[in-house]
Length: 153
Image (cartoon, rainbow, N blue to C red; front, side):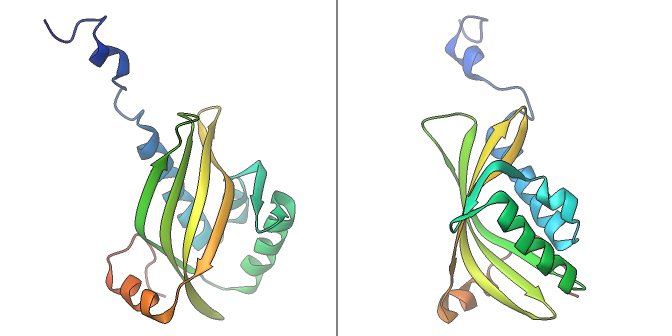
């Protein structure tokens, strides 16, 4: 007999749309769109009050980002080579690694990012981010891969 209410499959199966990686991926793509569209309020809402990056707290980090948003008439953000990593300590925490390509009138860069996303009240938010610039060889390889987002401007 399979599929009964007491079976292990029934207990561990998630309803469609409840997959944490899928939900967090949707949050990551919305984060990218909000950044690219320079919608600062929506962009800032992705960051948890507990967010930290490079020694900066959420407030300081977002103040710096606001200045960048205000100086650039457009931004293009592409995300490639996305890898989600489940955290054993919590079903509501995931880490993601990806290659980011950023372009604006002031220039662009390519970097490898790692972010930690945590689900709080059914909403995925960023709690940390690290970024490492890619070497030119890595950047050329990243350019040849198909990416997510970023229409040319």
